[in-house]
Image (cartoon, rainbow, N blue to C red; front, side, top):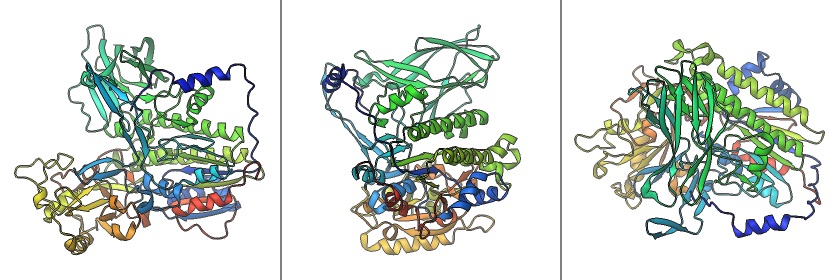
Length: 635
């Protein structure tokens, strides 16, 4: 990312011009609104069960007064894919999002599928790399989202935290969701400070080994982003001084000293990384997990500070800071719930749920701000907390999950709690609706157990379609040990399988005229894949060429794997590794998922009115909502 420490001439001129000028009149009030609430991952089976048991009275009332149905999801049923369907009314062959990851056919390496930053050219002047221009930041989702169409037709739109909205789009107001990186340019890299050499981070975090002084003190550093003008100097750092007791830690970071109690989150802690010609502001939250003599400290990913945003967090650009001035600092990372740190036992269950409470409250405050303003005919807010809690605590509900017997009482109650929180949010919103308002509530997909991890690349190896080099370490990711001269197929991402095709892949060996026969061979074999107890691992597989006609089809997988309930591609498969095991128990907290056959995980749809017909799927929502949004002022 490129940071600019000084005001541009245009910004300075605008600031000076504003002195002494009268304020513009407030925008006209909306005469009617369509309010859209998304609850990511809300499952129809659980929703219907808990409505029947009286745990979700607001959802039950909305169903009785309006409309309720299952909402068919995308294929594959992944959040970036489904929410892109929702936003554009298009399917993946046209909007171009097929998975969280997309592969580079030239290198076989995965890359993030949602957004792409291209750095500007630079001038190397005595070791300083001075950027020429601004660089470009691009949302890789194609197609026009319905809120932008609405805005351009005079229907004002306020959109909050919808996945795949980075960078933000020019509507009345927007806060970007999934896609916003941290200050390291990643989707969330935490820091875990420990005195134990046993602690490791497989992915998503960095473990910092602390050296304790006799008085319980520690002198260490928080690593920040790369030096923006001198990359050879490595990362920028901020000194971090700690003094532990059994029940608290005294923290000195970025010129501020505070005491933090055991098992409590700090407030947002502003940090600044100096690089000579300026500084890069960010913010973190800290949680003390264990005290002296074997302390552990968790530091969140470094978020862009909405008070001083160095990333495009909102539209208009100054809205992020205006919102923070009203509601306080808030999480800006696109996927702020830190699931991976909990997966690696670097964040405790209560800490994770406390963080979820915070992100939920932040989302409510954003929505409240827009509803109070009452100046948008279309208001869209997605709450992702239902999805994140379901991922991490499904083991508490699923009596046959390998981890169910050791699940805590907290784990067993977490998913009912977050559904009841969704019900509470729904009730609060319904109280704020005006007589002419309409309410739409939906989820992008449902949920299923994730009991067994399938190593699809290992299956390809055992069946002769993927080959490793002699003596290879098969667990290395990114296909590091693959012999492409003998490999005809490979798996990447959570549902995709690709052919090593000539004239497409860099080292392709499969001729185009062999493609259909090989795909047929693979599909037949996948249909016969059985676990040790005889259970089918794959319920259905789908041809990419049939699923994804359109201008973006070149990025599509050749096969999309629809796993059976209880199974999912392993994390290693998603990153191009092939562990020795074929299938193994899922022993991680991430115990629920939805990246399976889409027929098994539909979403939900509630409306406060009765539509003429049922909605055929999540891609039909864009046109449906656009047509129902009332005209703006002057129309």
